[in-house]
Length: 631
Picture 1 (tube, rainbow, N blue to C red):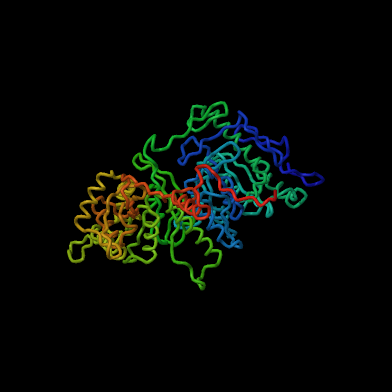
Picture 2 (cartoon, helix red, strand yellow; picture 1 turned 45 degrees about the horizontal axis):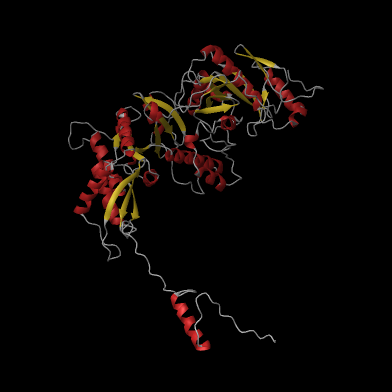
């Protein structure tokens, strides 16, 4: 037990132990490094999770440091698919006085803010501490008021949806970290949270619960009677002695690593060594093969759009479960939620993003902190778009026409080189299948109208795939994924050089390129594809550049021929060498003795010698000047 009456406390008492799932866990002294020993295990990090993975969730009241600990435990290498060089520039350009932070380098980290209730959805990633990797879940804050919403009959409340997500995270977890703000102590909300968690653990047979006393930096707190009393009160709850940590500075995480490693060792013994993904030091781990070798590569799919157009509802309709929070209130989604999913045996990483809207005006009703949270959410959405294979732009049928912001999102997708698919949502509000032919409005007409608007306002995106659907009713949602996979296949297609040059010959014969600078005849000699994803091609010409109008002509004809719609086709120009590389170079004539010792120079010296002495020196004889010494 913790004591503050005449006892000098340390961060963790050596030899103190707790029972964790039948395993005795011994805590370490502060600063001790966990050695890599045969008793510790590693769980292979992977972008997709299996049922045998160790699952750890973080629960607690609002503003207790859950997202900060989530960012601290995130394995940056396992989540490296989201690491972009632009992040460093954006972090450096951000004002240091901002209330938000993205600590760590790499990975899409959870939004951290001093505003309570910033996190809403449950967020998953690959976590790592000590020698173990595991599945880590961040959850929304829990308090007494939100717990009461679980028993209410209203199903559309935001608080109830957040609590359902938190309860689901605790239900699937093997270990639950219950966060405590040690400076505030055991508040009524935290006590109610602990009681709810104990009841849920008994009812739903939840996992082990460990209390983490956060915001205890350094060792100054060991001499504070108030903090020691808070730790004693937390120990009386029934989850054992709390582990003092500092999530923002990483203090005390050695004790947390011991808990995770012991639980992982227990799982290894129960699941046996033959389970995939669990190895010991005595076993050499086979290197992970790329998905291209074992099977189809995982599709990276990002759902983008303005606020309140039905992105989260579409995600739930695709997954056929309430995975993310959805509702009529704009701006519900904040973090970019990545979900591993399998569609008809094909792996997909589905990312639900926050709504993107115009920059807030200075006289907006939202506070400065809300503006910062929204900016961070939009940055997450754009980052998810940059690493996606296909981006689905969700439109709202109620708007009637394409909005300027939607065109800006489509332009950003194309310029980034991603494939674009348009989901025309909420078609149930417009369709009319009545008997009167004058008022009938079908799904095909709705999709055709959207295509027409896109082509008129963005000609490069003509014939972009458009799927009319209603994510709320689920009508035609199943038609989206086949179109998405077709777009990915076209986006990653590699075309042979022979086919490309035959196409080029036909296009040039139909319309020859204009002259360069009004006098040079342009000759396009050769074309080859340098890469896919996005499709990029190199044109060999006798000029350094082609007119923009002719490049548009080539792009339009190429899209029609190879069905490369909804993506940018990139053409690069390379000027060919003007000289014949097989022509032998002629030898340059010598200067015929222009320098010292040349033939012309020797003639000049002979003539000068004849004029002065009247004789010619023999070959090898030096011209010495007469001596002036007296004999």
